Image (tube, rainbow, N blue to C red; front, side):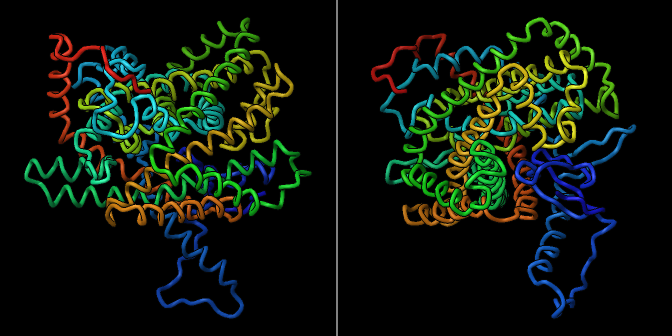
Length: 549
């Protein structure tokens, strides 16, 4: 247990709680990072060195922790207005999502049916440039976003902000669909076709190439390089070590908890995880897509089916639960800052879940086989819809109906569900109230979600790496090897400042990404109009010669 005064625990969704408020079993209590706050951190002088009486490991950890805390404080800088604390990086993402939704005339509504037709195989052409189908690209991107946050962090958000969080989460997911459309269209539009037939795309490429077209080559290269560096470092933490750490924790739960054979054998689980991960990612995007196109639908459907069963078993509590959602959305009682405060919680949870605005998903979508970049942008809108509006909503309703049925439901969980690890327990308890063996299902789901996230983020990191050092099988394999090593280490070491830094860098890269969307957005709008004009004129039809799922 962590009980040191003056420590802040930095959770996966960017929130922080004091160590005194963070309670739970060590095997399930897995914060993203533990950092000292300013009141207790000793700032070493430039000339200070460890002496014989100081533990060198602790000294290095303290120094590294101070740097991590400072970086995190900059990235997640907050301002207080009228008693409400605004995280500026979240405001940056919210403003962009609302702006693009209005600018593109709510393409997330009228374009979604076309996206569904495309992902089903209509308009597909297996001879088009690219490596994978629309369906495979969507599954790979979803693999990177659908994760333990859908289970644990959603429960945490409700425990902290109340049922009304769900309403604003859905609103945020709705606006995030358009951000995904713009960034994924640009990912395909400015992708690079490599000599071996593979493709490379993502924000680093559309920043460099798109800005070069507008006479801003140096700015584009700087922003692209900045994005790539942030992605390479960040993916090793939140997209890898944190995920393997959580997978190991849930595996211990499934295999006996404190009595599990694996309780003190993180190294063994880490080795197995690294080997499985290596077998998948060594084959590149085609191998990754084959796995994710089977794993993601399977785990998502199973989780959603069981969630629906739980909701149906609580059907008598659903009307009251819905009433609570709308009541607390506009008249919140569980959070400071009133309505604005709960809006921030809902938007923050949604954006951290579906990653709209980070640009990461555009790396996967860039590999699609298509001659029309807009088609993949339309497919990409499905991602936030499924991840946030469907899966997160189902998790929320399972918890809220349990809150209606049992007045002191939250009090049955240590910490009331008000941190990520306890959030997973809260979701598990909501399922267990109706199906006694469901905690094992939740643990397995969390483990699979973590594994699938690692698979996709390995590809994101590899593409950012080759952007920096150049294309080549050997160069890609070097990164893949390092990624697998870090996956194993995630099961064995205290993550602390490593995750703090990677977490901060992942969300820092939304700055160059959103700048790119603002600058290049008008070109996407023209492409969108041209595409639908061609569809209406019959120049593009739903028929295809080789159906390619």
